[in-house]
Image (cartoon, rainbow, N blue to C red; front, side, top):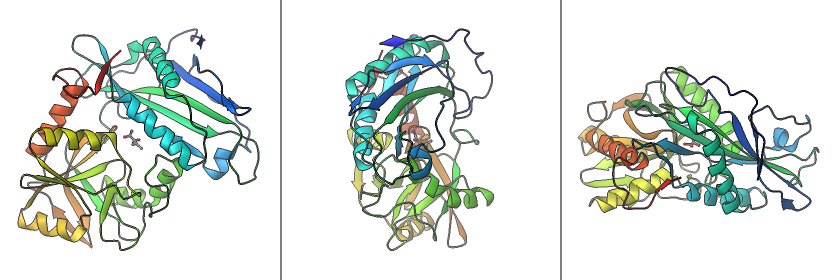
Amino acid sequence: MKIKKIAKPKTKPQGVLGFGKYFTDHMVVMEYDNGKWEDPQIMPYAPLSLDPSTCVFHYAQGIFEGLKAYKAEDGSVRLFRPRDNFRRMNDSASRVCIPSFDENKIYDALIELIKLDVDWIPSEQGTSLYIRPSIIAIDNTLGVHPSHKYLFFIIMCPVGAYYASGFGAIKLFVEEQYIRAAKGGTGGHKVIGNYAASLKAASNATARGYAQVMWLDAKEHKYIEEVGSMNIFFVFGNELITPALSGSILPGITRLSVIELAKSKGWKVTERPISIDEVVKGVSSGKCSEIFGTGTAAVISPVGAFLYNGKEHIVGDSKTGKVASSFFDELTGIQTGKITDKFGWSIKI
Ligand code: COI
């Protein structure tokens, strides 16, 4: 693989990392042209030079992924379920007519990239190296049709907590007017346009003091789908309920990991449609004791309250609950090698 190293490494950030603010020294790039993907290359992290007519700017033919690398206590570096991300990325590619890529080739390129920028992986509690693979359509044309050229790139950034409030409980705004995705649309894939479509509702929610939007289904505005950047779980006694993947919900890798982890611990896990009315009733009667979100960026994010139909509903005692807390510890323990990984999710590189 062709590797071009940076002349002078950048200064690494100090203090609170936040999410997605600092980028490492190198990136992977791989182009698709003349009907095939070229070999991946590693280059210094730098701006891309693209013509204003580049397709992705106009018609959003683009996809992305998010995964993380962790510095373990023994000094080793671990990736969490990386192949699942590349598999899902090829599924997203197919949904928006992007040609599929060789998952092994790009995986190998990622490993080289991590080795090169290994000093960027933070080791403090709650930190990791967030990895963002993306593919964009780069034909220079305004015709609405699949592009003939694509650019695959992987960039990486050291991160801490996704939410400004850290890993504490967040408040959600249940969106009753706008929708995220409808059946048959692109909601079940990591397609860039999904995120643009979510911004209006998300901005309204943050302006009112809520961290993110809880989306309802597009048809009846009744069933819970997912939250801004996470899937969502409800704790009812010894049962964990999460909305069933309906085609308009992103099949989260952290979601799947929590389902598998919970089942292995004896939880009853149910994937089914769950209405906002059922959750409101459950929370007010105390039957629903906790709500938490799951995502690569968000990890396990407890929900302390949500606003629905003009009323704020407090979940439990509005703080991080013990179920969310134990899944957080267990998952991050596996990710960082502190807890034995009997699932084979944590890949030492
Ligand atoms: C992730 O969790 O990796 C995501 O892609 C969510 C995001 C849009 C920050």
